[in-house]
Length: 308
Ligand code: ADP
Image (cartoon, rainbow, N blue to C red; front, side, top):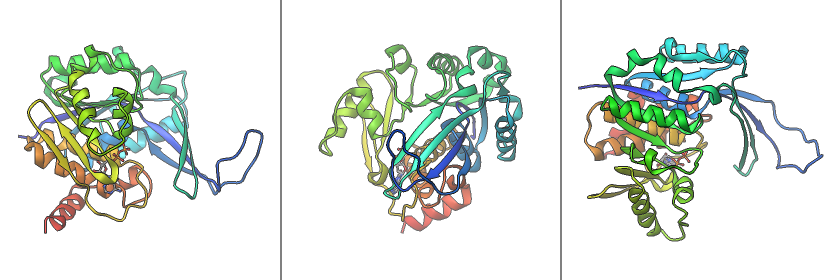
């Protein structure tokens, strides 16, 4: 039976500047025309799950500026319930300035804005929405104390909990033990464990260490190498689908949103991982984060084509 997903997290407006190279202090250079796009890990993950047909609620906070108004419209357009979109009356909306070079390198400056004031009171204000939650999803672009309260409330409501530890910060065992699925990428997994990945087999030690830290299951996403899953009894290494990747922004968020969607439909683990692996791959075939997040039909067509 299909269950409800609650995503708790950030909404950011991304300002993307393509520049010829990273420049030095005091130097002015000319970039291409500025691209403004809706982003933020929370919003990207919620929108993916929604596009894939899940029943999704997204709890977030925007600023008291025209970006906040535009962001609210964007979330409503994507089918998300406006009663869970809060507005901070003093702070600006969350923003990120993203510099991209022709080599594909990026440099990002994030300004948290209203995301930094999403708090425990906001979580409690929506208490009526908690009762039917089957899957809870969070990332770390909002205060850690809010994430912790969210995880606790989710467990009290017997929901499955997913944490995407991005950007990575030190996590206490009291937080890690509330997590059913910890989903870092390979860089985040190395930072969380302090273990460097030199050879492919090191990923097993990193995953083993993460499991010892408290979560029930760990999925390390490995970009074009796919994913590595581990829990107490099982290990799964799944290769990535072969696609022509043009922009990997949002791949991790598509993966998370799709995995949450599959869990909300009670799909078996391997099938849920395959669904997420496909969504991540598809997201790399289009430019930008939110425009590249896949829809259900598109993903199903892709997966059935890839099965032969
Ligand atoms: P993040 O965007 O958080 O850094 P990853 O780069 O690990 O996350 O990508 C998340 C998932 O997206 C991967 O596990 C894989 O399923 C898919 N993916 C990412 N890059 C590619 C690629 N080049 N080809 C195919 N699939 C990819």
